[in-house]
Picture 1 (cartoon, rainbow, N blue to C red):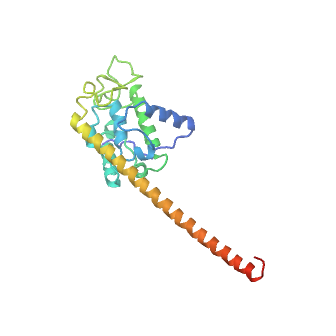
Picture 2: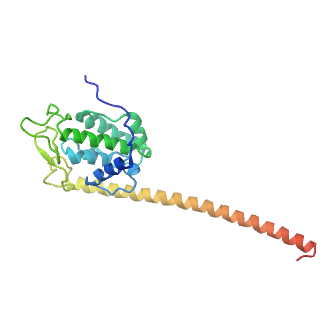
Length: 235
């Protein structure tokens, strides 16, 4: 059995390289807006959508649900690793997965760069995809502006409309399932926002208590100084 490449993803070296990656990600239609890329990608759903954008027949999006718990996040990433990325000829290292689900800064950017490189290799006829022998079919030049389906038999538009019933009918879930997933995602985002606001309220409450304590200490010092001045007839 061939051993798949599985090494820790290298860090991006320059700000230009990082900005280029962000631009690449922005060109991919995703189901929810990106607010904090480390947290937004931590459950693997948006990464699965990125792969689905280029290889719609390779990813079954209903297998991936938005998650806050680390076990569910790891389940999503493990499923991606074993059922999807393995077919693309590589897998994400466990150390990277551990850092991604914890939303460690820079972790998801490294694996997104790996994916970007793999997509570029396939488009240029250098990468391996299932059923194609690792190159586009004979007589067809490498594609620079489109991906290939998993059999390497037909080009796939790099900018399809999200959840299009025409371009992704065979890969996308039914509209009711899509709506349910979107509703679940929105609910989880609202719950996360509530948790963050509660944490902020708790922090502010603690700061207020400390400030009140400092005020009481200062008042007691002022009162003590006033009593001394009165004692010496200076007040």
